[in-house]
Image (tube, one colour):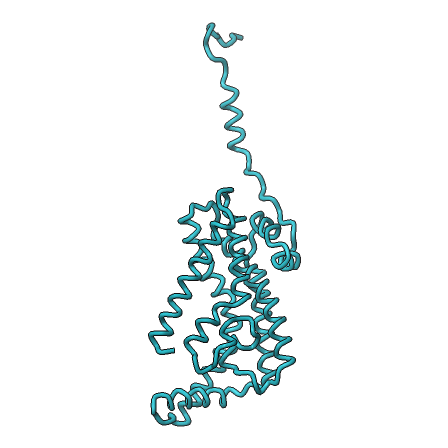
Length: 274
């Protein structure tokens, strides 16, 4: 059998290229599994967000926190209706009366009022289910664009996971505070049309109801809103995929967009004479 004829100075068989082909044919390394379960992630987002979001970066999950948020939202809605003995018809009549008196008009026919009552009931039943996923998707969509402009190396799933866990954690603590507040307050003093006034966690709670525009604007400056934004800043830095993306950089993005939203809200309130 003839042997390969190697000339002095010639290159031998390319074992390196063969090894490269083997490596290329090998399956990619498996993704590192999550180290924290859903309950641990929820608690961790509250007490140790950096470590928790590092686990989210390893294994992003958004469905579980959104489902938890829906359960919390529906549960609080039922509790609120029971605690304040919510009368939808009286609530709608009071709102219509206030609006018609402000415009110098008469009350609409009773059948129109009943239609509005029916719509209000449907909205109150659907909103607790629809709001959490829609809110998280909007937040993730907005900041996905922002992080893309900052050249972050991440995915929409990771961004959505950070938004979902941050929202669920802050919602859980807020609802505990809100339930405690409702239990110690006289139910007749609770205004169902002013949910921001249930617990005095925002500046709007200290503004008279008559100043609706100013109350709405200052209501956005809330302790839990700021906490939510801080969690987003930490989480986005962890999942950014680059060490150059610090929490201060993502915080500038998060709080900058929030400031723009506050300015738009203030301008809208001033335009409509709030």
